[in-house]
Image 1 (cartoon, rainbow, N blue to C red):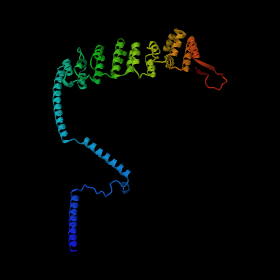
Image 2: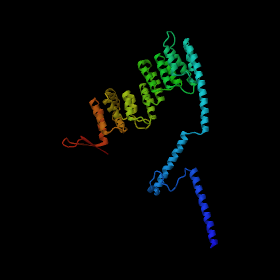
Image 3: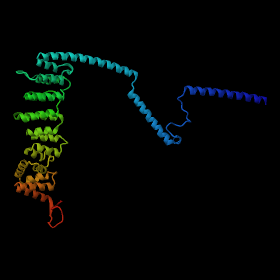
Image 4: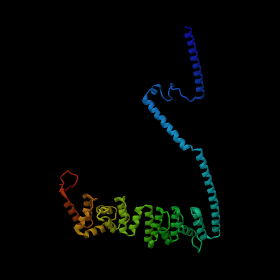
Length: 398
């Protein structure tokens, strides 16, 4: 018994020692690892019931994963490694040095340029500015300096000298002359009646065209009727370069280049019937309408002849409409039938309106031909006046 009691005392002493060591360890863990979480405590943001639900826990874990990814992405965007910051600082120093060099160069160039202007050496100043390194003096500010000089009796306009030098040297630089300077240069050349210069600039030099530049050339052609055709050709180049196809085609129409118009339209996939009718309103030419309403390379006509006639008469362009009717009337009933069969856009009702217009304008034979062709293509049932039906005629297609 004494032996058992002695062993029990030793075991109890060992247990007490282990408990004391464990208590000391727990105290240290709490002191130095304050961030540890007690798994028995409730999860922040969740109720006790939710913390026991697997679906709720899965959803909350997804929320924490998204939050973690968001924080990680923010760290990549908002913060950079210390080495990257050092590299950026070095790049900034290099850029600042380049800026200082450019500013000093700009000041030197501006000084000599101003000296030439003050001495009245405008041609030299223009060449100096046009050939300035890094295009430092090829800008609106320099243009305004020449513009401020104005005209000098017996001498070329200084502003025109600047644009001549600017455009001639356009091939020496990687980028073309910008749109603003191009527009101002064209305006200047036309104001001095130097269409020859503008022609050379548009066709030979590296410029940046705009709709405004094309409009300026067109307006000049309206005033200078002798050179109208040249201006239309130049404007067409400008509009085509800008992708303004409707205006480019209109320029070709006004030049009477019907075949080029047809080729241009065939190349465009988004040129609609409304666009064609608008073109006819702007340039109502019989030859153009005839080409648009005929088959081309075994393709259907681009425009309905019937719709074109109706549109012309409704838009107070009766003279053009009558000329078209005269031309089609010369071909006889076979030509009329071919035209109507190939016209897939104009309905029977519309053709009947065309026939009525023909009758009203003295083309009785043409009116009868159209009506005869309509009757041959459909069975027509006359409706008596006593019938309550709204339509006077009912068409039943074969």
